[in-house]
Length: 345
Image 1 (cartoon, rainbow, N blue to C red):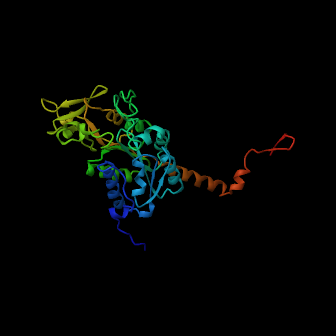
Image 2 (image 1 turned 120 degrees about the vertical axis):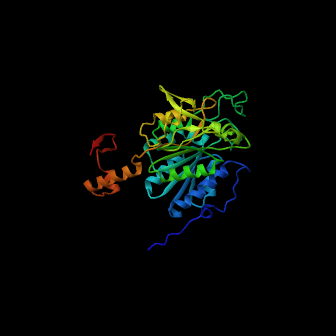
Image 3 (image 1 turned 90 degrees about the vertical axis):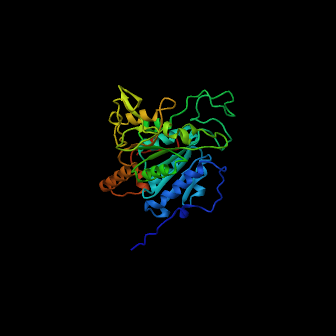
C-alpha cells in the first residue's frame, strides 16, 4: 500500500531567490498557490507549471515542481502538449496580461475553447513591468506610459469577456491582496475538470502602483466591490444596501429599501450553461457599477484530453495498434521517378 505523504506549503517553495520587486503583488499570488496545491491530495511529482515571458513568468523558478519557462505567449501551447501526453498531471500556466492578451492571445483562446485540462492564472497589473513600464493590452484609455507619453488611445481588452467569448468552462477573478478569496478561487479552479482561467488583479508598485485602489482600499472596498457567491443575491455596500437586478435587457444598481429587497436582485448561479449573464457581469465597470470578483462561470464539459484519448482507444479497438511505418505508408501515395514522372501507389 502506497503511503500518502502529507504536503505543506514549504514543499512547493524552491531554493531560488525570488527576484520580484519588493512589495510586488506577485508574491501574494505565489503564496496563495503554494498554500493551495498541498491541499489537493495530488503527489508533488504530478505538478507542472508552465510560463511564457514577463515578470509573472518567473513563476516556475519559485515552485518546487516540474516547470517550463517558455517563449512569449506560448505557454498555453506548451501546456496543452504536456497535458495531452500526460493527462494525469496537474498542469498550471502562470502568465501576465501582456503575455496572455497580446502575443499569446491566439494560443490562450484555443486552449480554452478546446477545454484542455490546464489551469491558467493571469496576473493582470495592466502594464508591461519586465520591460519597465509600457502600456499593455489591458491598460485603460488615457494611460500615460513610456510608450504612450500622451496617453493610450487603445480600447483595452476585457480579459473575462474575451475568455467567456472563447467558451471557457471556468472563469474567475480575484485580487492579490484578498488572500482568503484568492485561495478559494484557486482551489475551485484546481477541482474543475477541463480548462480554468483566473484573472488576478495584481499591483505593480513600480510601474503602475495603485491600479486597483479604486476597489481594494478599505474605505471604498465595500462600496466598489461585489463578491459573487453561488446561490446568493448580488448585494453589496457597507450596509449591504445595494443590489444588482435586471431592467429589461440591462443590469442596473438599485438601492435596497422602499419596496426594493434582495428578492428583486439577481441570484448568482455560475453553473448556468448560457454565459450571457456572466458576460454582462464581466463588463460591469466603475464608476457606474461595482467590480465583481469570484467565479463567473463553472460548467461541466468534457475535457479535451479525455475526448481525444477515447477517440484513440476507439480506433485501436477497430483497427489494432499499428506502427508508425504503417501509418506513413497508408493512404494515397505517389512516387516521383528520376525523369520527373509521377506514379501512384
